[in-house]
Image (cartoon, rainbow over all chains, first blue to last red):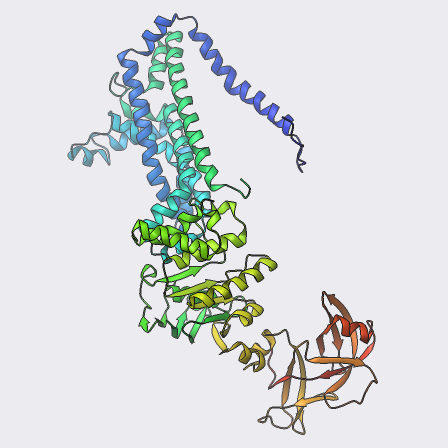
Length: 280
Length: 355
């Protein structure tokens, strides 16, 4: 298949594509393949045995479950924060804007310690929550809380620019046609924001899956109950069980990659509708 | 169903100048009424106040005799078309047109029938399955019309609907809107800064300036009998000549035209002259009269079928004259020549306004 070459002002498609592959290979693909090589020292039965122990299965459930819950919570509240930042001008807006990025900058261990203190039985939040019978620190809820904290900026920062580009005319047109504020939101705004929300969700979810530092403090790390996959991997490493650690890491890697790929395909499908051009 | 606006006012910033300042006018039932004015005149704000997208600080809006000043936009039953089309990008043309009917819970059978009827009306029945991103600008705006008309609005409000389109499409759609209105006879309010558009398709024109009504009337009234120097200069691209009242006439150097009856001797006057109301002749040709002056051709600008001649009069005023191509060729003047200008018609105002 030969296409007439399109002239561009900035040349270098082949060079930049080649470099991209080389660079991603160097910093992503090669380190990851060494992970696979490690596990080759195990037989298939040994590998299967390690990755399906009840303790490992419990860790997968917690990691994926808590990450999913955290990402979903971030989609809802991240959208709200982005909405406030884009649509309103109020005193303290700049402060709020900077607060959003704080989870990016804060060392995750600091975040973990802070959250643990807040949610422990004597902490500011914990004392009231425990009175209501809700234990957060040292439970799976605590894991989800920590993952929500670190994922918030991803949703806000992906939704914000898209929201800024949405013409208020479109919402006004819907209102003149008789749509209630809720109908405007659900039928007009949400479909337009869907690709961005999906991107934000994916980033927050992926970040939560790999998170370690903030979780280890608040989770209490009880095997079978509050142990996340990254922690299980570290535990294996501390026992000098490199093959075991990498086996679990590979399951995690495979599952994460499939999920991210699926979400990206969904994203492309939803984006294509919005970007259809004449003659398409 | 007429639109009546009474003493409507809206101010956006505390202490700033109001966007709309005690505006009153009527849009007659079944007619197209244009809100015409330069940008910043408050015409879009006025339209939004009538649509219910803005709430006025003072005054009333009556649609069909019913006061709907505080009525939510959803209940006003107005069809609005925006300059930016404001289509729902994630919905097909058919779904866009059906939107208003769906949120109003019109039964599906009736809804489908009405959508097809609307698509036929805007001649887009073959494109119902496309997304807005796959249509041209003119087609998109027709979808916006179909969507606004599908809810059977009481009145149609158009906010610079053809402003984002190129000249040819704009003229086509203007004709199309005229034909559409002939059929529907829907009371329509058209916001525009394009006087050509306003004079061509509306039966009633409201000229706005700085948030106030400068003049309201038929297109002929506005064009032939401007009520103020602002309207005279805004409509028709008139040049202004400065002079004084002398012996009951407005005299600009050797040139003089009839002065208004109320003008007193010695008062300053301004005469507004439209580009085609001046007849050019070779200098020295024919007899000089009171309404002629000899001017110098400063610049010539051929514009398709006619030539714009920029003329400097002895009084110092510059006037623009539009001469049809054939007439210009017969005249045979070049830049720097002297020509005789015969002012056949002028609108004279007493006083020294600055615009």
